[in-house]
Image 1 (cartoon, rainbow, N blue to C red):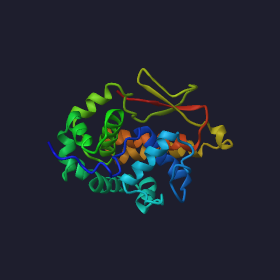
Image 2 (tube, one colour):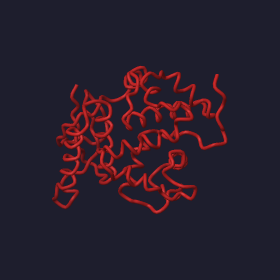
Image 3 (cartoon, rainbow, N blue to C red):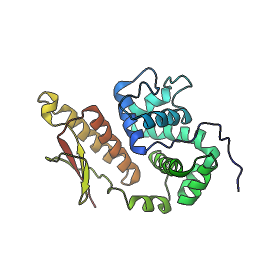
Length: 245
């Protein structure tokens, strides 16, 4: 068995991936000068601690909480640039855990192999499970092909992929029923009679579909676009995302 890694070091991210996505949307909108527990007011106490640890591990903030340029590029750059930034930082931060060839590791890894590697950092129990989920999802978002031994098992309990067809619907809560994901989004009236922000989301989804091949990476990019829009304008009326099976 490989030796234990330095358990005094910052632990790999074990924040729920949805919280990570919401953080990126929040940061893109607010651009705080520093990221500390006190500035992460929209998030719960546990999530604040986990997010700060994740950002330090990923080298997106310094020891004082000052955001590094890569974090700004991650939330505002093109889809291609985001992928490049993620891959660079994963190579710096995760290579010691999963090996230098991350592409080869994720292409063939099993759930147990991921857990075994992360366990060497001192993570246990629920935090270990969350760290494993975060690791493969961030790898997938970076453009790595993640083995079906991991993704197929995980997605049995997840909502169907969000393949973008957007239309208005009078639903009142986030839910997934019969393959339709309902995500709280603002109606035109929320923008003073303008649909500019809604149109912006539609345009982003169309651009994603044009530039990213169908598959897991496209789905993640669409999810991120929706989360960012939701964070920007929290209202009660939604847009319904109809999924294609």
